[in-house]
Length: 375
Image (cartoon, rainbow, N blue to C red; front, side):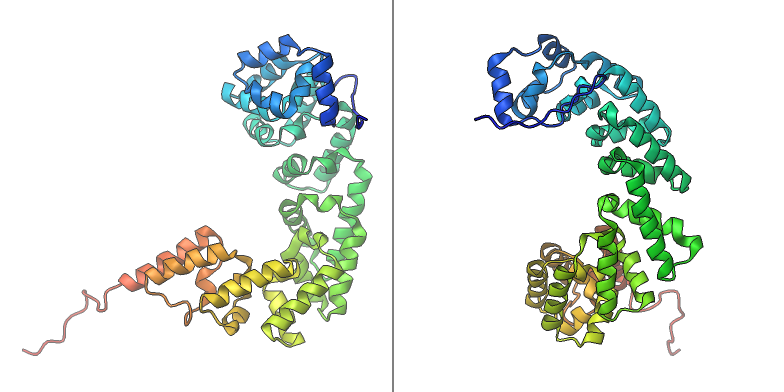
């Protein structure tokens, strides 16, 4: 028996939200491809075989607005290759009514700096732009709300692009989570003047935080408070973890903390200090931590070094080994030196590595200094 999945269609935008593979096969057997659509895509140099393989059902829909989508994107400055790439990745775009696409364009331009920026967003997140018209009012209301919070426009566009679900739902749901975040920030002693910047960083780092139940945030902070973290320390953790604090749960944190304490041999107070230095220890699963601890110890690094610089655990074993090999090539002994040189992004490491190289290449004497030579 064929498994049915509901199809969400609107009068102005016939965007199919879900369709089972069985139904798609059935459509192939019982109907023919829309030849106007196929020809229009062919004229635009779109990879039709890719569409047939992954989303072939789109080619059977009627009406379709392939040329209209292409004209809209072209009018915004998209090149032919970009248009072809967008339609190959998200062919459902051709099912959106031109009036709906124009409405989306106007709405997005209220927060985008220019059309070039919008084209870049559509190229990366086409599904966020080509959405059903039934979500338009919610999207507009959410934009207005976040603008009222005086959030940076780039933050708003990032939210819309990477977490479109949060903008498609009623604004009241986002208001509840934002109020919860603001309340927690203030209760932990956060300064009012810094709250907007703090909120922007949180939403930027994890746009999906808006989709989490407010109760999760409160539950996680209560667990950490019971573990002995002070109000100031909780604010520090919340600021460091930002939106990822909602990805945690007491059970996983309890397990991770127990493993970290057992592995490092730290006391409860020492473990708290370790967490404050490296909050990421709260959300890494035991299996990942075990692999990283073992990788560091196998490289000759001792546990006291790891405890002194726990942020090295944020790096994968592969990255750590690669960096250690490069440092060894310069004569740096990681077993006796500081682990700080391993830390940070690739750019941070290259900077530290460059400074280390300059130190090794510096002359042993100052050639500009006068020599103390007997007559």
